[in-house]
Image: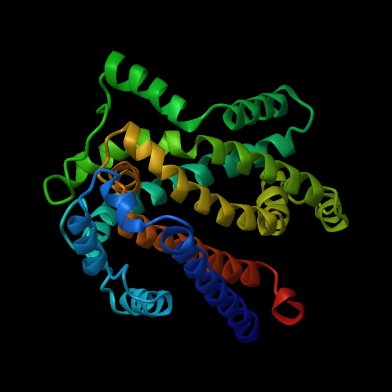
Length: 315
């Protein structure tokens, strides 16, 4: 297992290094003056020169890249042009919203999708199976931000069960903060619930046709034991892989959902930074998102190695 995980970790580091090169190229190397992009075409020449000197845009490309990487490794990400505060502090403050939102959305996805997929496979070709498949098709088709607006209209405006937006803060009230994340997490996870339910159903159908499952039933094992003890563990191998990919989609989808629900997370920070042309924030947040996705994929590889020991030797 150590060799297997070492290879995955090395691949993740290589991917992250390539991502830094790509992000640096898009923001600072491609045609166009970063200072002009940040301040606009009406900026005065002396103001542009001061901004270039402040952010190092007037230095050689290699020196700027090495300086940025050194800042990433030490936590010195520079200062935001729009906010006038260190980027590291901005991101750290916003992560206290985005990470719980993503964790709650992933929890919704797994807790709802896996039982739905197991039930659909168990009741294959029944009305329940068709119902799950219809729900999953709708979930894939409906944009999550539109679903979020519907949730606000029903549960916030009409019923008044949840707030329509905003975030009180963990220091103010933990219960109200969790309450404020319920609707955003549910709307963020809709498409992922649909995808994961379909994958679980397909994996369970394949597993239920295996000889060892038929043998367990022939020996008189209870149906619940057949489904969960014998079939589900093996079916979880592809489900776990897809769940890791879904975690990446949740991180990216938070940009829109946090804007819809007015949550002060990293997603809304990216949205505001794009509007404010705050390139240094966009650059660092993009790398942060990449690192989070790679970390989740490493955890998925670890879970995969535990569920199926064969990749430890052959991967």
